[in-house]
Length: 221
Image (cartoon, rainbow, N blue to C red; front, top):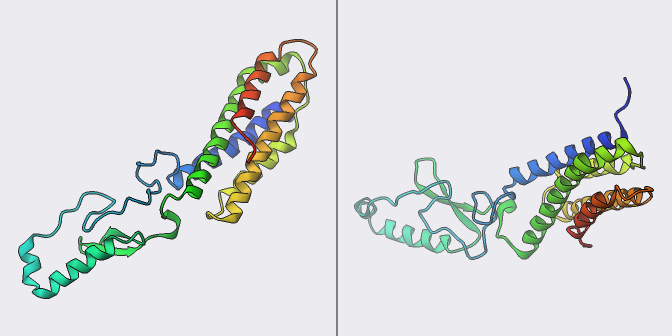
């Protein structure tokens, strides 16, 4: 069976990378706005007991607290004090009550570093989507008329970097992989522009303009 055309194969690898990154965003709740469920919280947002993030939960009626004696009042005040700390969150207990547990490490406050990382990932995702669209709608028909160099190994490397990135927990390795994906994507776009610039006619002008727009959305980091 004949091998697919270089551009088709390149798009295929980029599509795998794009799907991997989109799944990463979805699984970690980074694809929605700051207020959406699952997205990192702002540092100022700390739920007060006995609210629950998974849905509204009413406090038990006062008389039941009084039945426990003075002890219950002390425990209630202690719970409110602990709820004011960003290190804890309210979750539903085994018996339907509110219970305070340590904040999961991977869902901590939305710091500036975390916001920058989410923004960088979103840029790579959006730019990859735009690149695939340009290749399919503009470069595909152009390749049928005139052949031009396609550097397939760059798209293979991009796919592999994104696959490795999806396995990382937030941290230095995650940041390194994200930066590598960013740079590799820029390399793919730059090489496509160079390949099209060598064509003898002006048929590539629109495609080059679209590719340069993608580059503008991928500033140096």
